[in-house]
Structures are given as structure tokens and as C-alpha cells.
Amino acid sequence: MNRRVTLLTLISLVVASLSLSACGSESANTALKKWTTSANLTANDAQLTLDARHALTALEDTLTTATQLHTVCAVLDYETLQAYASLPSPDNQTTQLLTIAYTDLGDGANECYVAAESAAKRAAAAAYLHRAGAALSEAQARLNALGAS
Image 1 (cartoon, helix red, strand yellow):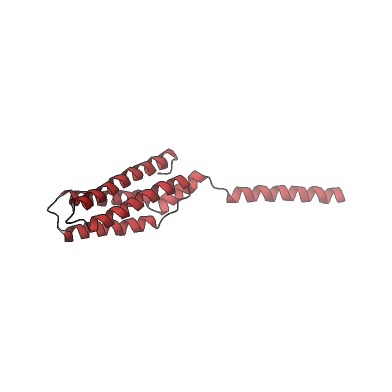
Image 2: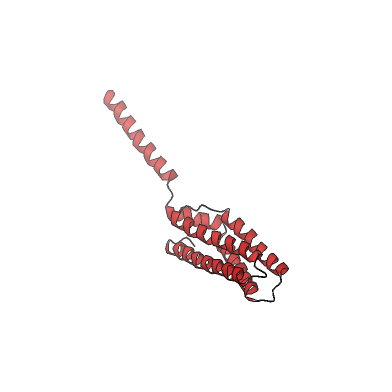
């Protein structure tokens, strides 16, 4: 009788272990893909890129008024804060790249906001925005390589 109980117990443990392992496992790529979708990352980053381009155009035009810069840069800053709220991602390297991009976008937007009368501040804001674009591209390349976008 002890052998039978021991064998049944062993079989029950094996079945339970297999059942539990099948229920809770999700690949890192699957988790990243789900996060990308739930964070609406593709659309948000496309909008951020468009807003950064608008800010760059405004910064390059010396006739752009302080009010116009305030509007363009405030929109960019607001949308950057929204995108930043979706972090962290399930992938540390993606999180790091997006953090760099969003930080540079925010710094660029803030510098842009006060750059109306200063060529140096306009150039500094533009440099932040260009660097952010590079980081966004790198993050997108990482997501593509992982099959998450």
C-alpha cells in the first residue's frame, strides 16, 4: 500500500508541476510585444517624432515668436511626459534607450520653451532633439530585432 501511495503522490506532483509551469511562462519577447501594444508605443513615438520635427522647424526659423515656441515646445513636453509614463518596458535595454530618448526630448522641449531670443539656446534645444531622435531610432531597431514591433 505504501508503494501505491508514494507512486500516486509522485505522479500527482509531476502533473501539478507540469501544469503550473505551462500556466505561468511567457517569453521575454512575448511580454515585450504585449507591452509595446499596451503602451501604444509605435503611434506615440511617431507622434513624438513629428512633434520634435515641428519644434526643430520652429527653432530654425528666427522669425518664430516666443509664443509660437512656447506652444510647440509645451506640446512636445506634454507628450514626452505621457510616453515616459509607459516605462519601464519588460526589456532593460529598451527601457534604457527610451529613457535616454524621452529625457532628451523633455530637456529639448524645456530648452526650446525659453530659447526665443537666444541662438545658443535654440542650438542647445535642437541638439537635444537630434540626440533624442537617434535614441528613438536605436530603441525601434532593438524592438524590431526582438520581433516586438
